[in-house]
Image (cartoon, one colour):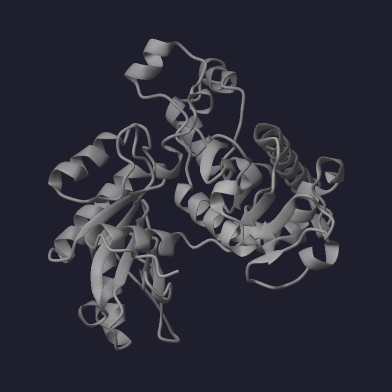
Length: 403
């Protein structure tokens, strides 16, 4: 029987999950429980070609996980018969010291919880999900995998903010970077796809989803990334602002008398593309642009402008760039974004092929022109598989990578 790992991503009002075979890379099942705490919570499960959807009251995260297992049983599956060897928990922030995939015990949960000040919107739900899952599945190893891990060893010049050194050291202020699991996985897949040793490849990875981040990776090691101490810095995102003048926060607090907590909420949830256009789904954004919305057009142009700035910056950081890779929901599926992000960069060695870029293919592929010195790729990300393999390697030190 193939081993499986249950990968959990716990949010404040949702639990996403996937049951993955780390050796084969097959996703046996996946789903989500949304609107936890609502009278009309929505549960979805895809398993064995079947799709199940239920709407009912789900009071809390424990009820959400128990409902997940009930749905498995309903479609003829049971975790006890599916080779479950570990539960993997995506944890957004590991701070300075937590970065290796680690078996979870009570003391380790306390360490993750202590980092909540660095990620107040992300770590508390992760801790809650861990506590609930450990109660429901006490006989299965639980492993924490950190979103910041890949960027743990960023060069100091990239990781350091130019603020008072003693303040930064005392309060653990530095660039941590996020989406690390995706950036690491995609950069490895790009090297395999191009049949080039990872150690010989300089590449830019653009993870463009509702959250968006860029990284510059030299020989398999990240040398810069757009997200910072929190996932708010960098590119314009679906609901996050990305880079802003920090004086904006002081101005709104001092002059507009807006509480800091409300400013934080605005910059996380009501900014970015949604803040400018009222929608954050790029399919809806394009429809609004086609319908003549000037707000939607501006939102798109701001998004693209910031993206091009980071691409240009990372071309400079790397010097010789062999590949630029798009991944995640927008990066994999939106040909307009890919085209507009790279148009006019032929003098810098980057040129896409319009026909290849417009292809509806969903597999890993080249979309650059044949004579482009820098290859442009689209590589589907699979964070759940990467987390599953990391977990399998922890519970069984033998190689869990089936490739």
